[in-house]
Image (cartoon, rainbow over all chains, first blue to last red; front, side, top):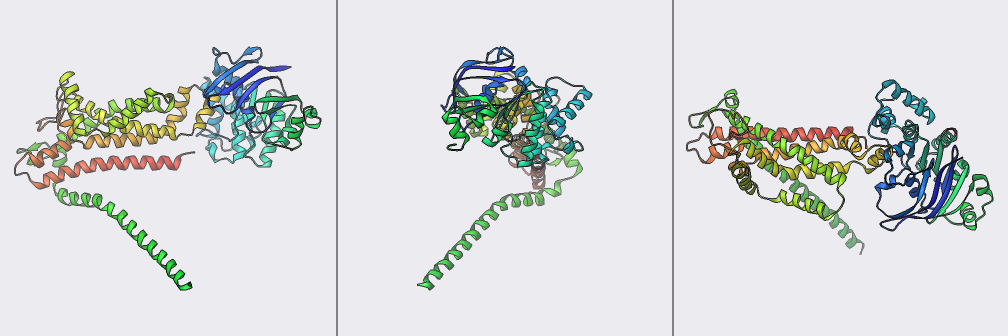
Length: 251
Length: 290
């Protein structure tokens, strides 16, 4: 089932850097969709459009629609706070907020008005377990999150997003700074999570794209070149450019 | 040839040595004035310090007794200045750092703040006399003096607070917004909390400057001599720096130890505030999580 419909999305930044050109894409529910391609291709921009984080950037012009469950989220009248609670985001570098592990996880819930201690404790345990970090931190939830290793921090950041019980999770090169073991843990967590969530991942390598993708979209300089099931796209790409990139002829 | 090259290297080492020594000496020289001043005032002023000096009223044309009204007056002025300048200064800093984009308006505000910091303090005094004492009819009062000192203190508070706010990593803001926080929630729960030690340091340093100034309160709130403590913000008050000026220049046959005793109290006041600011800053730096 399609969760997100992107219809002819175009976008240009004020400084003329990265942009999107007429991108149309249907993203499936309960699957990992990978957006990959060389840097400057518009992957991050597309992610940041989906939770309207791009509102913080200087955008010169944009057109097109993004429908989530049939609602155009680019509508200026949309409640962006509610959208961001529904569409969570994990960034390339782990950014633990300057507080304890527990407070990081419940930060967004508290802002959303949840005050009941029981509910918050429940959310902490549930989301840390989902992010595969519970066993490593359960005895030191009140320690500062910054004291954890990079890989642990990134999973706490994932848990922080999961605490809100979003429907969609956006991940922008979440493992770019992590060691292979931590990367493996994050990837494994994603495979578990896709049962309940729609996951959109910008991988940090083609190899990761190949490992994780149910569906894959190849972006080059703001254009969507090819989109299809991960298996077929990586083994038998239809477009020459995709093949050249996947086989490492450029990039 | 070889020996010449050797001579040159030797020379380079020697030049470097001499250069470093000279720089080190000059750096040490800068410490002398402050140490010298403190020691001199300590030696000259310490004999005057007693319980009566701190808690008593001046007697015998201020040649005897204590300086309590000046101490209390300075405290009132510091408090009054804080009441006006701290909320305004922090609000302005938040606006400049968090909300304002780079427009002609914000550039004008910034230039105004920089220039405000460069105005001689006596000009503030005259401005305060014109606006607060006469036009707004507050009279020569704690209120008028505090407002005048507030204007003088604002640039220090605004610029240090803005700097402290900007030092908080942008990524905290992005993450907080992405988690469904509003801008204001982000500022209140993350940015302000992290910038607070820096802001506090700026506030203390700003107030410190206000406490030590004579010129701005000269026409706006300082009294030559008062037989009692001020009872309301509309009363004039004695203050340490002005009192020091008065007893050093306006009263004949003034015992020197009273002058230096007053200077010592003022110095202790200012240095204590500096010390507090330093402690806050270093403790925050040790605890900082970024």
